[in-house]
Image (cartoon, rainbow, N blue to C red; front, side, top):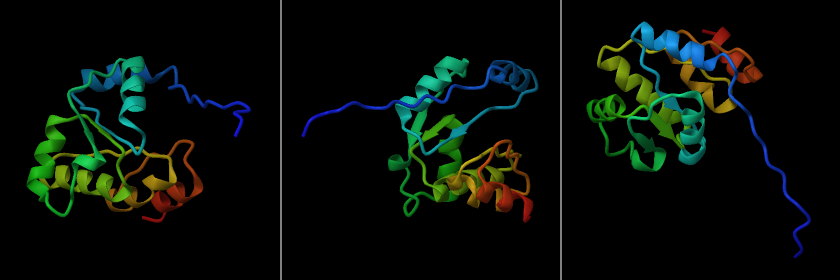
Length: 139
């Protein structure tokens, strides 16, 4: 085989994200990132936007067959970055935080975000894929 070339993709954060993060911090709103992306990519983006990283947990660290809701909520309180998550893992983290009494807002725009908003009652889609928009609107 001969390497003919490669392509790299970069989806930069919106320019307004730093202002939004400052607004959220000022109002006491904690940001948690739940993503299917790699921990390295997520860490880099967080550094670029100025989001301090408390702890990173990956989907491989979360065996949902062995972790109960209380333990998962405690993990979610310690960490603010969750990477390599499946849609089910995202849903379980959100549910565990809600069971602990936290108000959870959810923002997602991808196909793998479609399951979570249905149960969360609110979902801000922005430029979401159609299945995410339809799921949010169908509630």
